[in-house]
Image (cartoon, rainbow, N blue to C red; front, top):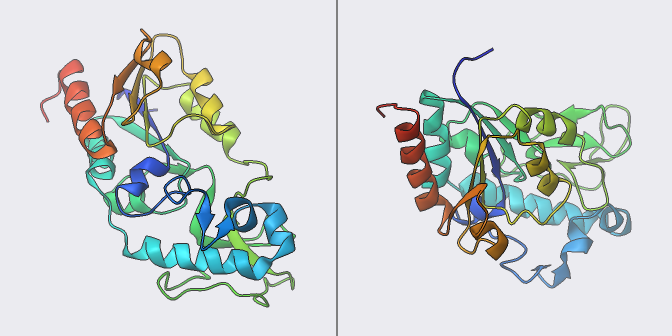
Length: 242
């Protein structure tokens, strides 16, 4: 067990958007004319797996070229002084690229594939070259089942949510960045924060009720600038020279 103060960061699409990875909200909920439900849901997979694979092959190439922004970097730098755990709703690896070492992906990883019918088969080595690595209809796991992205789609359970809740339940500080806290079950993680723990929210447009909350400190700005300010605030609060 670490004696360092425990900081848990809950990150969402907003922090990746600053690195050029557009969210569905930015695109009006569409991808090349298709609704999000058609390319990011289990029903969409059953209806048109090729379309879904094409979408994630494209996202994989975009993620390869993306670089971490100051928001990711500030979170990673906190590990020098605190016990930092990142719980992210994002499927890219920008937190890892920035240097964060304890990252839990609630919604899966672009780099991984899994069997369509066997949840226990997950492979992180299938896509050797993420720039050119594609999954196509007809690509099979060793048991002969179609491979699919290891992504939690709309309409599917979130296997890591219990683990995430346990991590949050032991936090001294919770930082919410890049997520509006409206998508469940991830939004419900805030309910597990211990009494007395500090909560920070970084959002260009924080909800009014949170701005008025005595339990949440809001930074109404981008992830990059907000995280830099939170980092300096935490170093000062815990009397750390960083």
